[in-house]
Image 1 (spheres, rainbow, N blue to C red):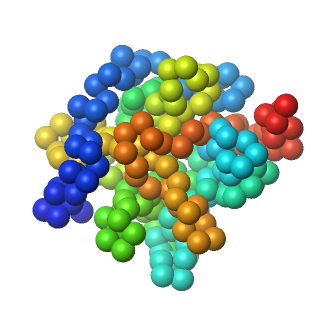
Image 2 (cartoon, one colour):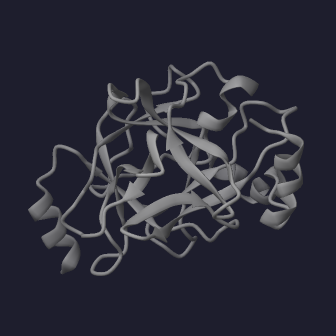
Length: 228
């Protein structure tokens, strides 16, 4: 995927290399927490929802367009009450039962296979879209097998800001599974694409704030609690 043109485009992201995130290295052992204050667990289903309630939109889901039916891409629902589709997290260490900050994870929508597109619903970073000037998040990623061939399938979770609660986070594409690889290192935000809010890369520390809600929770109860 990484062509010479893609390497040049690194400059477009304000020299966003892995060195941008050295300051959060100490957070690597800190767990990620869901909205109940519980540690995020490997293999457990969660909704990834906007931490901004009211006009901030809802949860994440699969999307498509007339110009791109397959693979599906990652979108945010427009309403608070729409929690989208549950995801499961798989850390780079297959023996780790807890998701930690600054640690590479695979993220997959459920069900994990898209029968129509005949691909996985695992998140991945797509090729650079010249028409929009964006790196979009799509599906069709590969679970596990960390290294150059799976580079685009790894993401990280960081606390949104030091002054925010531990339950508000930003998503990052900055894989550490290949020390010798040249790669992007940027936050993830959402962009208005007509009738959809698509997820794609933005500059460091400019990501959208998200929280993780257990998929077993009652949506009405969660929204009511957050609106108070």
